[in-house]
Length: 636
Image (cartoon, rainbow, N blue to C red; front, side, top):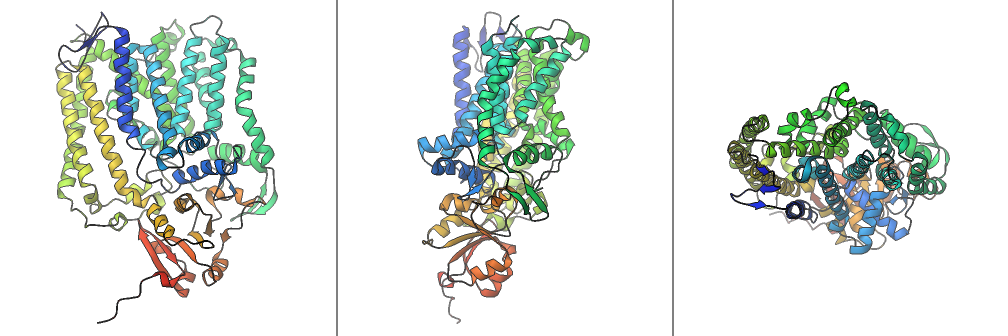
């Protein structure tokens, strides 16, 4: 007899617990999903401070939308045009700032709400294809996934791309049930593509169109494409997506020839920079500037298993649900087979696309909801299968593998926690790390700096992680062995809530390396009208300072990276120094607060003298106002 009874009864984690009607079951599932989402995502939007680079660059761009009342051209650092990104994420953050005020949590709130929307759409999609339990499990896998959590810790739009894909594919599946698809369904698909283009550019077209066309080709139903009201749908797409692009092009025209840091460049305005440089040249790995690295192909594919751990222990069973013979695909597929095939293609199109392009670890995130749906479908099938079925036996085997991994990793984490020494009070985490600057262009490059000595700072998160991982995987195995798969899956979900909470606690401990908020606070205490704030290097490295101080930051040898193109518009502020101009400023009358890494203090600063105002996270604030430093203690 199956755990989910044919009378729509749900056997829950405790003996005798059941929900006898579909409406009650749905309410229970939705309440559980909302509670877990809130525990993971709302609890983590208040700290740490916003990070240097993406967090504060994007938050600053959103804030300047409000202060300038310019919702077309993004600006950063109080006047530099920032043309490389699509606007939708910035619109949502700016709207949040307008409603709630400018806070760290209000900057993060739209990403958290977008994640909730994605989880609910995945629940709906899973319910459509795999039933109520399939929808619940799919949402559970996604909301407790490692990758979705990690890549919503800073402000990037990739999970929002997944939202529009999921919504569009839900509408597309609805059209397959209609001989003549409703215009509203077709226009809805076009709208999701337009919103995706406004979220992250042309991949908002490539991914859904590529997935749908390959699906229709494999199923021998390409004629269905012609039923999707292509002309009117294209007009809907243009109505939503085109206005911003046209206005951005008109307001950011070509500026002629200029000398870039390494070559002569003809400034061709917004359209060349946004479409050619940021899309086509990035895909071909020829984008300028090359301020990014690319993940090895094997790692890019392999990390997909990590991003939804521990659920990917069941990935082999989930994939086997899909029809894989062309003859089988050309036959009349059931709705479940159609959905499963679409979900597989959703993931594969994204993986294959980035296999030929530059790629970061998080570029696969828009495909992760598809994997969550496949896993949710199989978990529902396992739960509903007879007690002595192949699915139950397969689930138990996977749970053994997961238990071995969990126990080994758990005991390693516990051993590190118990053997590591707690750092002294008021320690600086940066002093316990090594430096691997070649890895910093990768999303988690800084975490490669961790040493055995530094692990003492993470003693509590490591200990709780080890206990939770080992105990959770063992309990999951015991429950599956007892044929209580629903309870086993709830245990895995609660284990992940604990692990993600501790991962966030670890990020807070590590955050001084990733943010300059403490240094900004030290400047704020001394800042007076007319003072200058400058970074030694790129804007992104110290972008926390202008965001928290509400000042314009000058850059020493920093006319590069995200701001280089915008800096060559005639209205760009003159805030770029070379060694000579900076040396004159440093010896001049104005007070300067210079952000620099410890081992990169400029020679002109050393020769002229400086006061070290503050030091934290491997970074310094030095000033030419020597009297801000306390007098040295008298020699005894």
